[in-house]
Image 1 (cartoon, rainbow, N blue to C red):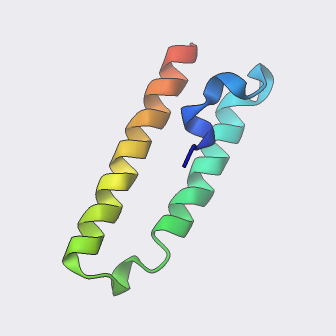
Image 2: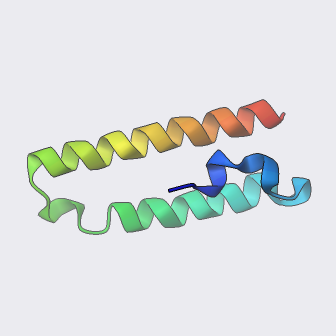
Length: 65
């Protein structure tokens, strides 16, 4: 799946930080929606996915500066 924060170059320049942060926040809320009901292995996978995407978002926003 491709996320907007991984394709920051395709977002209009005047909307980049705001739109990307907003989309990431929405995705984060969905990702952690039922987190407390997961087992340990599933929790690890969710945390790993989150940390990977957070790093990608931050790197892509940084590179645009």
